[in-house]
Length: 77
Ligand code: SF4
Ligand code: SF4
Image (cartoon, rainbow, N blue to C red; front, side, top):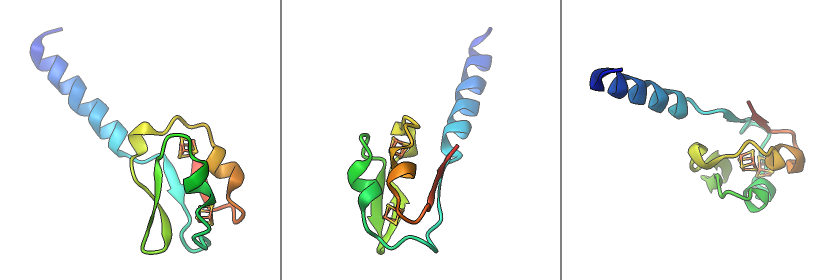
């Protein structure tokens, strides 16, 4: 593999990471912050009184947030 291929691969990996695997149904979010407090990796944050993804790249897909949300707002693929 030449250097060009290496960089192409790096770009593709970056695009894959940027596609967020965490979906938050903000229509149902009541900003209880349970997911934010429970996430062991500090992935989530409150933005304008709704749960939002702060940094998807540090998510370990443990699904603690999914389990703790009382309104079933969060899906982690
Ligand atoms: S799946 Fe785990 S690491 Fe990812 S946002 Fe939810 S609680 Fe945090
Ligand atoms: S636990 Fe659910 S309802 Fe509470 S802030 Fe998180 S997404 Fe919103």
